[in-house]
Image 1 (cartoon, rainbow, N blue to C red):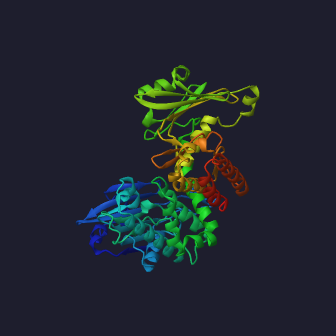
Image 2: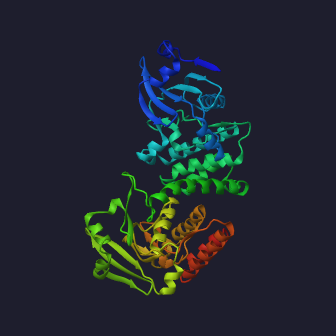
Length: 501
């Protein structure tokens, strides 16, 4: 089988002399992506810019490897061509195809390439977010973008197409973020075409889209606004009729976001960290630590490597049998050092093979922040350990000004805001399947109208629904008990939390 279709006469001359596949392989241009059998380049010809995606033979080893993982390998450019044609029929904008060529029936050694016209004066939504251009838009424009992306998603899925790489980077919009102009969907080489898309693939697409937005401060309202537009229903009906779909999509989003991050922030990993990592890790064989590079000044490193000395120099905040907290100043900035101490041999035995409380706080804080929950900024975790377990551990965090929740709750002026913030806190914990473990007013802080939580050393992720429900109920009861002296807040919060628990 050998098919060669040139839809753009402008590039006919480029491929008129010699083997078209040889020309496609050797064409000069800017490489955007390259794998063992696939390369994507941007090139210019006669003043027009194009993208070429060349697919070589994948080999039987790779085919069987994918099949053993119950995945279909990406073979050839024909799939993307078909996907573009299907989406065009649904009135979804895609790059204009200039040429499609493929030959060979054997999937292990077939060859193909797809050429599309470059989309001038466009920017991906991901890049617009990274450059903080999107964040500067008017609220009405942001909402319109969310609505349009939701409508495109629904139209694509109803038309029997699932993308499989459905991220914000694959939406190209006007470079000036004019929401009235066309939005293009790109990179369809893995797309699947059916008469009806199975629900699990719908969840994967939407979960992938949510995942790509997480690092940019996805708000609860943004999520619900998308879902309302996607299902064309008010949010109450969405949560009634499609609650399982929403839970699965959100769970997938956070799993995709956190899986690589958890590897990067692991204190015990032996893998060498990449140069562009935001973290620095060190292991001496008897102690190990990991810190955020943004805070790792020369002075901070001196503190980390001499924690015992600085614990004795700091101002004591709390000193109990299980832990001790001091405050110190580094470069005129105030930090807390919290030491978790082993109380007894029984305590050491009980902690064998479990995470230290400092490390548990470190992991939980990253989960919480992924869900948009504010926590104290944890700078570093330090552990002393032996072959059996961790011993003493330390947590260094940035100090903040503001009021503890038990102090802020004394003002009726703050009542409605406090109730709304706590209610949102528990909603977002559900997103990630976490419980705080010690959700009392003493462990919450108000700073610049933001609710911050700390003391996450017994926070835990639950994977079973009944465990999530039980731990959530315990957290709710604890926060309500701690606010008994604030009648107005307690009553309002009881109605909102207990009606939704």
